[in-house]
Amino acid sequence: MGARSSAWRRPSRAGGKGPRGPSALLLAAGASSRFPGTKQIARIGGKTLVERALDAIPPAEVRETVVVLGHEAASVSNVLRGREGVRVVVNPGYRSGMGGSISAGILALAKDTEGAMLLLADQPFVTRSLLLRMLRTFEQRGARGMVAAVQGDVVSPPAIFTKEYFDELAGLRGDQGARSVIQRHAGELLRVRVRSRRALSDIDTWGDFKTARRLLEP
Image (cartoon, rainbow, N blue to C red; front, side, top):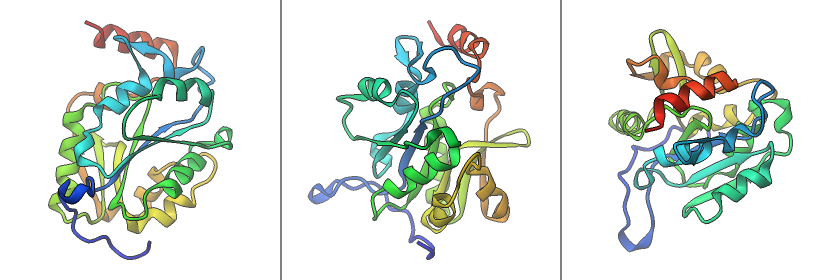
């Protein structure tokens, strides 16, 4: 895990080997104390938040998609049932914080993955267009370092990490998030800027959810 990854390779289906590139790792384990009900399956425009996050991922550009569940795992898993190419991992220690969920997801990834693209299930404004821009940036630099979305001076998920950071990510505990890894290696970060303030906003409260629903529903 400590060695730098080789150059990112374009997806290839030759010989039925499947796509190459970083894995998509969607974090959907947390219990929001400020949100009534199970946030991951709250619906906007006919889709749950976790489904909206999955739909933003370009499947042909990632090695695999892994979703980490915790709070109300059975209910969220039912929503994901039948989705092709999606693998579910349950973090029984999700109450301890995001660090454990990141660790559980990293440890579950395919051994031959080129890296991990971390996403949050409660960022409904993240688009496929943004993720494609990030993947292209990752590819152009030969899959070295990290790529993160930036709005103003704020670095935020989504973020892509090469395998060299997996040991640190797998060692996260409690409330430690991937930002702590980014801060330790700030000189290796590639930034993909977004203009909209809302593009990277997450949903913490019912008020946040109502605002997102008003903006996203037709």
